[in-house]
Image 1 (cartoon, rainbow, N blue to C red):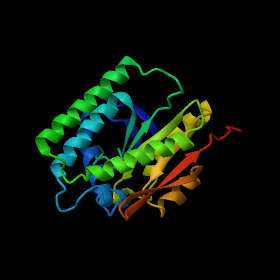
Image 2: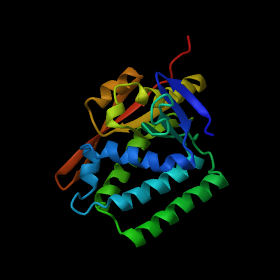
Image 3: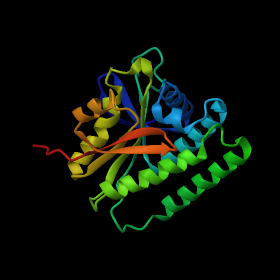
Image 4: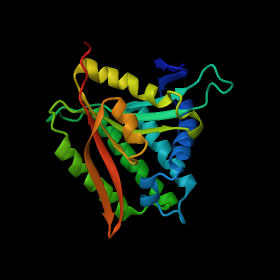
Length: 236
């Protein structure tokens, strides 16, 4: 049985387990199919493969189960208590000059090799690789510029909530446990939002501030990601 991490409103948050992965994939796909600007920019809709995308997300979820703070939200009092209503993947902070552990090293290589095998079997599935690498380069540059704290940052790598569950506290529940922990430890947090509205206002209420607009430009076809950081709040 999954260990409950946090309960807020009606949402129960737990670390992802094997039995949650299929539901988490469905949640992510439904959330990002709703006209997400970044997804629309980095994928060619005419050749997008839902199956390949499911395999890719499944690999990422399995990796996150061991190597990240990969959380899922459910409503145990509902008629579908095992349905995944929201997903968040947080990467824990890594202090500057801290060597990578053997566990993380092996996990990263395993992730890389599984992705290669997936690409051989399924192809790119509509992923525009040029744009993917534009994003990765811009992300690395933004983090070099913004991540100035040598203690590292809690990085919200992904957060999604099913459309029918939005506005009910699911997203806040997925954030609260990690933000509380960051506050207790005196650690900063970081995220990248693909939408200015309504996302930025929601994140601002949780203490995040806009730090940089990351423009991803492919010969004039561009999309903007909003890099936001959060200072730890005092318990007093």
